[in-house]
Image 1 (tube, rainbow, N blue to C red):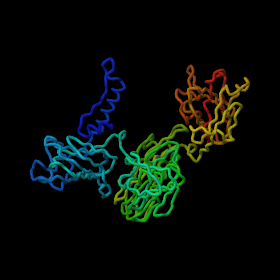
Image 2 (image 1 turned 135 degrees about the horizontal axis):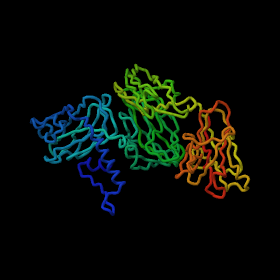
Image 3 (image 1 turned 90 degrees about the vertical axis):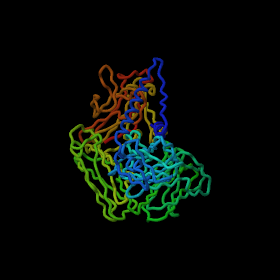
Image 4 (image 1 turned 30 degrees about the vertical axis):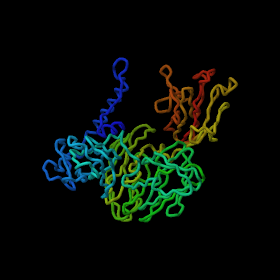
Length: 577
């Protein structure tokens, strides 16, 4: 959709560049994509939240043909213009109530010529005007796409024009979730670009990528950047990378933390540090290269809303025993001056209300100085398999009195049997002493495919004697009511038998990963494509107490002469409970 907003959204035709095939037809894959494209457009334009909205302009030409109400009447033959000869002007749309949107459309009366050469768009969030978009030309049509926002009022300001601007329409839309644009940071925070920071003690290299399109990095030990901001809290945005290292964080000259920006993979625009709550006022935040490894900064976000603070959940996920209430904790951070309220609602996920949870819709009232509340959201004791896990969402909406919703506006509650709860799971890796291996196993300790670097595997080719090939196996003794073995599936992996407490277990749906031969299903590490961290064996609902699990690479199920027969790294990592 990016090409759409950069062409149609800027008043020019859209060139799809889809050629026919040798039969003179579009390829099936192209047709499918075109249908998806049409569906997305239909969803985008299904509701115009500005239709019939009230409009108040700072000035209007003294002519009935140019009323401000024409901007939202849906008639392209009617127009608005500011007072005679004015080349600037502004108007405010009142949508009637708070709406959730992310696209604002402007249209000039093009038969009068393309006149506008500068404009800005602001949205009202908790009583403050927040910049939302800007541009130079409008022309026949201009689409301004930002991150999703909840607002009732939109202000459009014409900052420059070649002649008196004349507009014939303003519309407001919401894109489908699949093409939403968001930088992941709450609207209402103040962004301070890396380009505004004071650099010292070393060379910083600028780049054209980042949370707002810029960043800079250094490998010089001691090199620093200092940001100045107003408010009660700040958030450091950085790039993490396998080759990056540590940065020291100072606030108002005091060292508060050392942040490690090394990561297994490169990721832009990560929130790597959050300051504690600060006294309202002016502050400095300094980042210093600690050891001479690369570090990068993309700017900071500051909270500056007269100590009203922001609301967020204490955590993004919560596991609950079915039938028990979910203890949902809401925190007020970055200030708690004055009273404030917000909505807490539930929405279905894989579980629905009435089956997995009771629908909850409450208003949370925070008094002056209050920083935390706990809300009980009831869950239900649903029927099903011992391994069934369902989830639902809890959301925070519509904070008032100038407060904001923060970085965790949505909580996923997972509802499950007690045995499935994380605190009742004991995880061990493949090289734990609890696992007992037969001869012929290969143990790796530096495999970068896995988070802990370990992997254990075997094949018939690893064992030299014929008798040993009959007994390639791994055994674990555990205490609990269930066990799950996780590992890798791969085209070169084979089949194995599973024995629990001396009894062979037949494969059934939900018991792990399988392979079908002549209608029969077997436990297997085989897969058409290599995939990490797959559930190979999953046995639940066992009697309480000690159990012994054995995985055996059975020659009766595999070809001992083939190097392709392989148990599939069957025990990385192994989780027991």
